[in-house]
Amino acid sequence: MAGKGHPAPSGTGRKLLSTVPLYFYFSLDSGFSFRHTSLVNDALLVQGRQVTESNLQEIRELLAAHPDWSRRRLSEALCEQWNWCNGAGLRKDMAARTLLLKLHQRGLIALPARRQLPTNRMRTRVLAPRVWDQTPYRGTLAELGRVEIQEVSRVESEREELAAALAEFHYLGSGGTVGENLQYTVREHRGRLLAGLLFGSAAWKCRERDQYIGWGEKERRANLSRITNNHKFLILPWVRISHLGSYILGSVLRRLSADWQNKYGHPIALVETFVERDRFRGTVYQAANWQRVGETQGRTRQDRYHALQVPIKEIYVYPLQKHFRKVLVDEPA
Image (cartoon, rainbow, N blue to C red; front, side):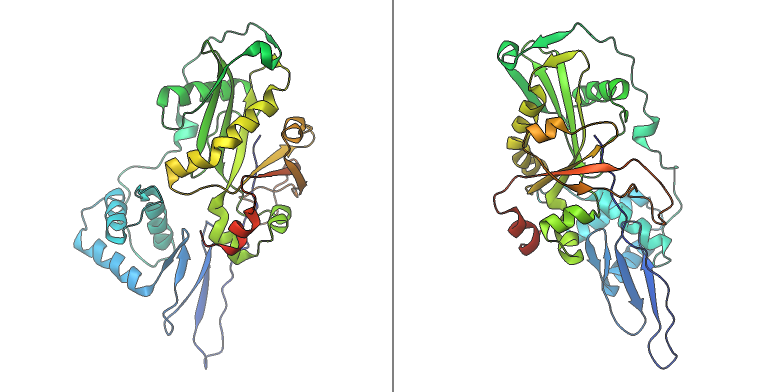
């Protein structure tokens, strides 16, 4: 089940009297906004990182020194120069590339021309047709026996099988997760696929969730990475095992934070999901002890002007740490 976030408010341009400094407010696609003035050396908050005038000068010097470099090479060099890595020590190349693009779009730097047009990998990929064993699988958990749950986000063959199952049997299709993500397959002991789950970036802004946590804007910006969203959960339609859904959720949640730490170098404190109320009742989440904290307002994370109408979804959360509020409110990420 997929969650749709709400966008942050867009900034507005403002011209003050000539007797005071002239300020310009820019709104970035990420929802972060910053102030730039020729008289004050303010820091910009872009991609979760403060960028000072000194940083901008570093980037401009890098561009001037290597006019033949591609945008990818520049982002890699910037990561190395800033030692920009995640908690697991992996270079944040995509974050650097996005940061450079946003600065370019706002006229603060001038990037070289693109050498190839960007493509949406998830939309353009072609999934090979599969023949599924749709023999009904019924019974109890005891009769099912040992279940194998694997995190497969870095195993191409497993990812492809899960994507194919989602494409054919999930109402939202096989569209991928956003940002940091984990993917799980669930198999019976002979290897037959029973179910799959996707976890990705949490909604940028969600009033009911934020109130439940006790978040203001500052705390949300600092700690949003400590939340993940269960974007999709699929049990294949021919599988009818009593209580399998809640068993899978419980099993995955017990390992989720450790798996996240292993891949990205930081833990998860809370999981959220959004259940389309006119399509589902959320029974499996209720049975797994998730808490319903409210419902969405029928908007998407791209709906900046409140013009799009989408189905209303119920919001469920599941804390992974006893003192999750302290982690999400008081402790810096």
